[in-house]
Image (cartoon, rainbow, N blue to C red; front, side):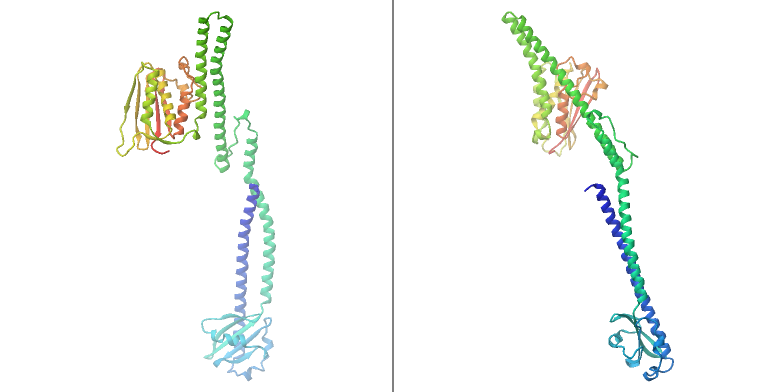
Length: 455
C-alpha cells in the first residue's frame, strides 16, 4: 500500500474514532439528561397530585369521586398514593396494576426518589409527609416528546458522522498530498541524478523539518558517492598509467632484442631488463589485488600480539634497508592489563600494515626511524612511526591515502602509492584509526590507534 493511502486511512480511522467517541458521549449525555428530566417531571406530577387529593384527611371513599382524568398531562400517566400502613389511597385509574409499586414500597425512603421500570413505562417513587403522616407516591408514564428528541438527535448524529466521514477522507487526502509533496519533489530531483550528473544536489527546503533532514542526508550520501566515483576514476587513471609504463618498456625491450640482438650477451641484457619490468608489473598487480581483497569478510579475528607483528615487520624492513637504523621503544604499561599488546584481528594483515609504514619511513628518510609502541589508554594501543625524511607537502597530505597517489617530491623513489591506502584499510578493519602529521623537508609521523581486546 502506498504511503499516501496509509496516511489517509490512518488519519480517517483516527479522526473517525474521535468523532464517534464524541458522538457517543453526546448521545449518552442527552439520553441520561432525558431520563433525569422525565424522572423529575414524574416526581413533580406525583407531588402535585398528592397535594390536590390530600388537602383534607382523605379516605379512599373521599378521593374516588375526584375527576382523576383532569390531572392527566403525561402519556399513559399512572399515579398512585400509599398512605400510612402502606394502604393504597389513590390511583389515577381503578384498573392500574399495583404489582410494580408494591414491590418498590420498601425502597421508597426519605433518602430521595427512586427510579424503576413499570413494564414499558418509566416510573419513580418518592417519600413525602403531609400533616405529619408518611406517604409514598408513585408516578409512571411514557416520555414521547423526549424520545422524539432523542430520535432526532440519533438522526442528526448519523447524518453528521456520514458527512463528517466524507470530509475526513477529503481532509486526509489533502493533508497527505501536502505532506508528501516535498517527498515527491525530492523523488523527481533524484530521478534526474545520473552517473554523469553526480554533482547535482537535492533541494533541502527550509533545512529544519524531517523532509529537509532527508534531503540533507541524501546530499551527503551523494557527496560520498561522488567522491567514491572520483577516487575510482583516479584509481583507474593511475593504475593504467603505472601499468602502461612498465608494459611499454617491456614491449620495447623485447622488440629491440628481437630485431637487433645478435649474440647471447646482448640477449641476456635485454632479458634482464625485461625481467625487471615484469617484476614491477607483478609487484603493482599484487598490491592492487591485496587492496581489493582486504575487506570485512576476508579474515577471522583472533587474539594477536601487536608487538610480535611489529618485531616481524622490523626484521623484514631491516633486511630491505640494511643501512637504515630502526629504534624501538615502549611507552608506559597499564598495571591492570594481563595480556600486553593484544588486539583482535589478523596477524598477517597487521604485519603487512606495519611493514608498509616502516617501509615508507625508511624509503623517504636517510636518517634513523623511531618506532614507539604503548597504550593511549586501557582500551587503545598507540603506535607511532617517526622519520626525519623529505616530508609531505600540505596540499598532498589529504590525498596520500588514496590508492596510487604519490606526492610530487616522492615520485623519484620506487613504489606505486598503494602502501598507505592498504594500511589505512587494514587499520580501519581492525576498528582503529591512522593519521599523518608531516612537514615538507622536516619529516613525517604516523600515528595508529587500535582497540585492545576483542573487536
